[in-house]
Every structure is written in structure tokens, then in C-alpha cells.
Image 1: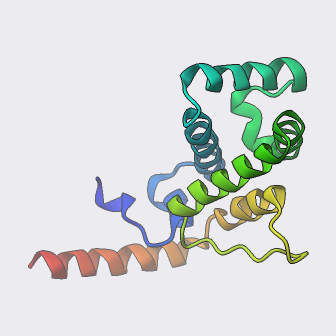
Image 2 (image 1 turned 90 degrees about the horizontal axis):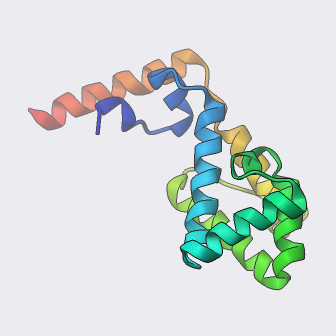
Length: 146
């Protein structure tokens, strides 16, 4: 792992790696969904993706940007098990972005709101903040290596 990948704040990845934040968001949501579908097995996973495409017009790559349509499709297709899948996706995202904190506006967990807030949290911080974090890490890294 390169040192620039060990940032404290994942939103600074934009500044350190010059990778658009949208790609980071798409990758995070796409991998979480794929991981949860994979727990069902490869054939069921592929069948779910085919169903989403043919019935709801959602390509695998479109899921992060059509999260409301995706959530509706999963809930309509799987009923209460769809809600369980949403919770598992949230858990997977939280395990990878543990510094992100979600405070539901209505007092109850809402999958679409969670994903929207996560996307906002991944927006890049001001450049100077990212620079300060990287400088602190390099100093800390150098100190630990000595």
C-alpha cells in the first residue's frame, strides 16, 4: 500500500490521488452491493443483476446513481428480505467508511438517505486541509520509521 493511500480522511483521497470523488463513491457502493449479492452465490447474483436490468432498467454500473430506483426494485423483488439486504449493504459500507456518521432525519434508518449522505461525506475537503493531513501523516510516518 502506498503511503498516500493511508489517509485519515477518505475524502482527501481526491487531493492525494487526483481521482474524482465520484469514482470513489461509485466504487464503494458498487463493491458493497456486489459483496452482499455474492453472499447468495454467483448464479443468484447474476440473476439479480439480470432482473434489475430487464425489469427495472438498472445496469450494475448505474446502481450508485439510481439508488432510489435500486432500493425500490430490491424491496419490491425481495420484500422484507430486500430491507435486510439494504441493511447489509449499509453495514458493508460502514465497515469500509467507519469515519462516516449518519444521523437519520426522521429517526429511522433510510437506505436512500444513508447513501446520499455518504456521497456528500466523500466530497473533497478544501485542498489546504488535505495538505495538512498528508503533512501530519508524513511526519508521523517518518517518526514511527526512525
